[in-house]
Image (cartoon, rainbow, N blue to C red; front, side):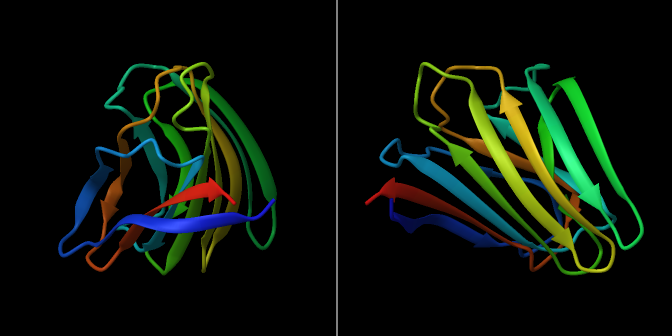
Length: 157
């Protein structure tokens, strides 16, 4: 089935920041996609928090690899879904959040990430809450000036 991506909001950071929040997300879409392209002060995870929930309601499973080894990891009872990656060189993470406005299921997010000089990651995160997502906070060490963060809505065609 074809999908249509529509930009909802985008920002290019004018100064370093430890977080960025998309708020008042409309429920008009089927799914959401967030693309983070930029750098950080160190190699770091990018975490997602939904609707200002800082409780231990998140879990993640990751598969990571570099030029010499692969690894996996599973964590529960986290305060954010730390599934993305960003580093000191150009890095890109694509988050896909399915059924974000559904109020009967837990929310799942997938991430595909690469840090050009060190690591790639595929990950899934779970938010154990059935509330519709209306805000998303992205967390890292320190997103650097010039990092671009874009939120897209996807509607089934």
